[in-house]
Image 1: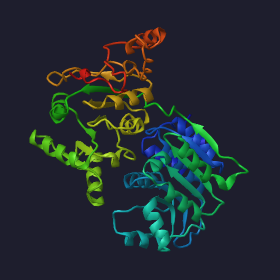
Image 2: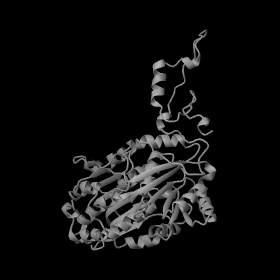
Image 3: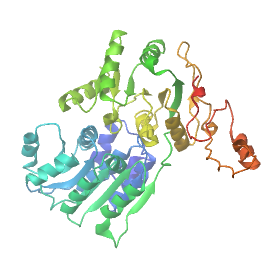
Image 4: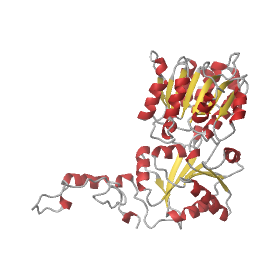
Length: 445
């Protein structure tokens, strides 16, 4: 199906054709007609599926009519969880609307508020914002919502994770009830469902349409995932080895802590590899410059904390590295979703060190698949992780034998249960302490 069949006008079709868009993705096929009809929408779509265009293009189509906009007013409000995502979405809006007479901008913290206030004086058709700066501008009366027509919550699950529910509720309280509501989320947890219910409460008589284009527990099938078991103190050497030996053209490297990100950049530099880091302590101007260099290809290796896990849309990014395995399976999915986007292929490599086994079990359970293991000469740990999450057999503490009983504790478990547990194990067995869910230290030697 071509984009022309979705009810989009020639200026928009011309813009997306110039950007190389050939056919709509599944989320775009489903969402665009619903949004054009004016209905509320709750969409579950994993990252990298083209969801930004799914809500921006029909908004542009709806606004593609001459209309006088009063000062300090906005017609569409797109709320994002991070500054990076706000910048990315605003850039997409500008590209898609290049042949339309519409205005757009992004407002976010970390930069001077005065230039943003000045741009809002004449009003803006489409405003992309983070919650904190948006509330600040509203409090200063630099922005009014009485002419708002469309509200979009992008990556609602991330907003929940970052503790923005209170801010979202404050924003909704300021908005007119007669509006169209669009919510996009990679997962639909109970907390996100609560937001969706409140979000669309203004149209109880006309329930929101719900769509889901992919299982919430899956990563894109265009991503080749594999892992390496490695001792923690040889991670930087392993990364350098892979970059040089496999001649990586570019890599986005995720790490947990800010100070560790800075340290890794220094370690790579000592081995002749130029990298930069972005994290919460770097200025917004510096983060924007580094991201621009990475997107243009001027910078090949970017070390990032979770601040960049979502919202980065880097054309043809071929590789993501989990230098530190994330604690939450959702974070793993969002991280590797920076590659293999919009049908392109990508590669996701994870370093698994001592202490990561439970995280790995959770990730593989969420993915419902075993991540491929690879060995790299010179970087093997003393003993590798078990070959399957099924080796992680949960055992409960058996009851204490009654006084006088001659039965040993090892025989208290029913024979059938022991047989089932043995049947579930495959590959190299993991030793498990009966009083603890964690694998025994002998897994690692």
